[in-house]
Length: 276
Image (cartoon, rainbow, N blue to C red; front, side):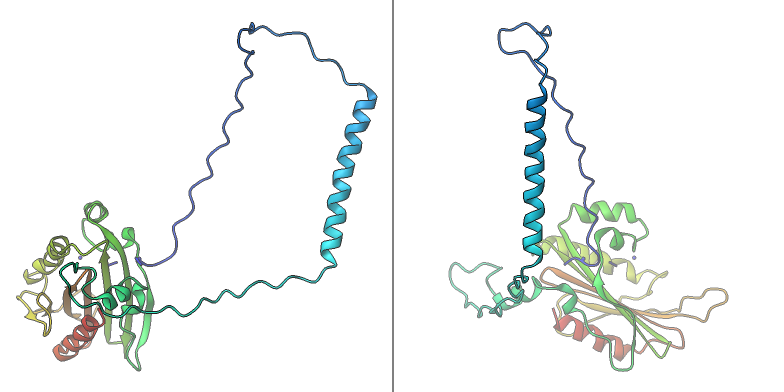
């Protein structure tokens, strides 16, 4: 193996295109393209009239600004909007679709994806507050980032959001939500299973993990061996991967002082899944 509704910051505006070149003058239909007689020179009277017209326009503009300056500013209308009403659940009918089966859920997941991330627990410290993670940033989370970028850009990637916190300088938690454009169960199921597939390898968790309660696809893993780097304490890791509807969640749980608390990881994963 991240992560922007979804997130982060907004992309830069495209460069302003250059102004088109002035089109060359053409002779009228049927006329020769050779230069004709030079125009008559404008006399002094015409020049004075033109100058007076320019001064008149400038004078009117200055007068307008002066009048406007001494007027009281007009108050702007309030920017607040009426409270948005959440539609009531729609019972199933012969014409019910997957999208209309639970209107409340769709309204929830179509809102701000960052609000679905779990808040930090009491006493924890934010390493990074809930924010958007764009496709490029999410793709760099993978070893073959170029392949992942192209794969997701062609696979209905919609947005991603992430949050991370630490507790007592020992436990570190990263949670990422990835949402696709529409509920396409084949697509998100394939992607989710792909993220779960390698975790059983020896260089990762080294085991098949355990199923999550209340989820048909969610699993949690406690890594068999800690990650060891010269000059650092062993890092014990856990992972949770699950998806519901059009959103996949990935939780990375690490402890640099001892084995991961399996109960804490499962509780965290269960609470995050319930928010979806």
